[in-house]
Image (cartoon, rainbow, N blue to C red; front, side, top):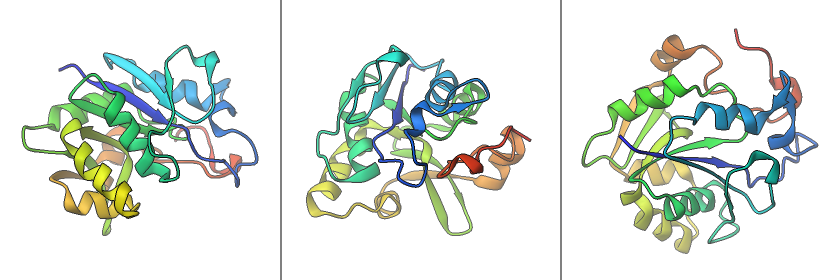
Length: 187
């Protein structure tokens, strides 16, 4: 199956105190780790409102700025050339190529997203999204309803148990660092 890979890097990194995407973790920028996990994608690109020429992939800005992750998701779905789009945050270095392939194997006609869920929470990043979800994302943006949880509660999704995914792909799978201290070598 052909698929697109998008990395959301539009945040201000206020708590991180520097650009997360360029933060050096185990010898390379966080963005490089995330892009490496997406190597199986037919196309890879970054959604950000600033340039990242050092990563040698296209960078697209938000089409509807000010909507946080919802804006990034919309821009990714709008720019993607493939039906399924892997969406990762630039601070998620442990999402491996095997993880994305596993999610793709779960994708089925009629689904709009394949995401991790656990303890009443849907993890929006590190998920696989169908371009068919774009109209609902746009509706949420236009109405100011920017909660990704709310979007996913309305969509046709497959929830994969977060604990099962961590057991299969490692306990750090869903680490998304808000400070440099939250990043540790994988366990």
